[in-house]
Amino acid sequence: MTRKEVVVAVTATTVTAVAAAILIGQWLRRKERRRKHTQRILKKFARECATPVSKLWAVAEDLAADMAASLAATTAASLAATTAESSGSLNMLVSFAGSLPSGDEKGVHYGVNLRGKELLLVRGTLGGNEEPISDVQKQEIPIPDNVLNGSFKGMCDYISLELVKYLGMNPGEETEKMKNFGFTLTRTVEEIGSGSISGLQKKSLVDVNDDTVLKEFVNDMNESLDRHGLKIRMNTTLVDDTIGVLAGGRYYHKDTVAAVTLGMGTNAAYIEQAQEISKWKSAIPEPQELVISTEWGDFRSCHLPVTEFDASLDAESFNPGSRVFEKMVSGGYLGEIVRRVLLRMSQESALFGDTLPPKLKIPYILGSPDMAAMHQDISEEREIVNKKLKEVFGIMDSTIAAREVVVEVCDVVAERAARVAGAGIVGMIKKLGRLEKKMSIVIVEGGLYDHYRVFRNYLHSSVWEMLGDELSDHVVIEHSHGGSGAGALFFAACGNGSNQDSKS
Image (cartoon, rainbow, N blue to C red):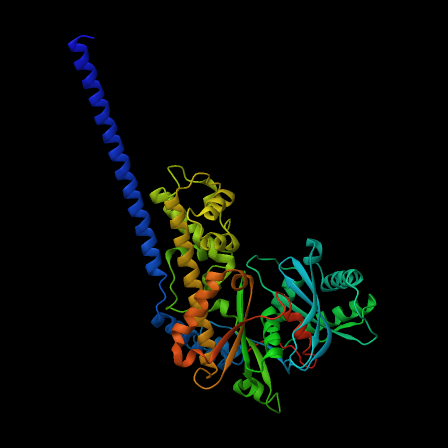
């Protein structure tokens, strides 16, 4: 090789190396810009979701005020005449009037929990003397669309027939004595339509003084049970599952004053003295407890930490402007909020590479169980996060840095939801005037609380932070008894009560 050729070769090599260095430098700078932009999105989102104790107390006080305003609005006419500012955002329901379990109830009880498009049949034995529920047997049964959207009688016959099958497969010690039967409803995010049960729920809440639809349903159910030869009677009518959870808590502890469900949806119920509600003062001659369903999914407050992602989720939902609190704290929406944040990061900072993952654009593709699994992944390389990104979004090649960002987004969403729910619990107890005076037990049930450990820990810590050492011992949060759907059994034990399901 001549000297000239050597010089040319060296020059070409140098030019190539310089070009490569320039390209690498550009790639590194672009990567760093993207990383910084991802962090800016994350920090802004975390800042807007922040829930310092002062904000939590503002939320709690607003909820307590809204609860008082709802109770003060005693008739549909007064509700219409009351300004939005004074009546608040809640439309609470008197859901049960009568005696809750005392802990002395005994015997076999039956229950049905309607959850979306499924029935959960439950049977269990109460031993009295506050003994734990035993021999609990459950069976989930899908409801055909034609039954779900059919008549009340068709639904009742379907339930009776499934009970016959259920008892045939799960024989127990049956007697000639009539058994009690409770019916609870677990609300879901999914809009079922205007069929039999969803129609029943809507109609039962329309008129304060008209319980015709409810009575019709109870009569149809009992007639159907009798036609199918079952020694079971529905002694109360349909109530929200949260009421059943509260009944279960009262069976075990007389200091139980409230119950909260935190699953796909959310609600809270508490015990109020009839004398506190003006429309009931003359109707009930002696002091009696009423169970109030707060319907707190509709709670709104200027102090709630709402972000642009919450606003877009609400605007694109099937009920925009409604269920604001529920969309912030319940399992039906948490995964969707996470998806929206990750989509923004992927669009603006290429979190998952230059190509936008198509599945990341699909609403509600990320459920709260998958979100919880990613959030609680403690492996060094976030292997569970990697697995879920592949399974849910089809993201086959994520970096460890991207997986860390996913975990951080999940943490921000879960922490905000849990702490705001905790503030709601404190607000209920504040409304009852029990924060500084009496022990108050709150029963919590639902998949979000049951299976999402980090969420549960955040909720407990928020209540402790708000109340401090001096008052935190006055509010005890306990898990529900008997598991999902068992509230129907405890409600069946309230045989002497009557459901009202009327607007407060």
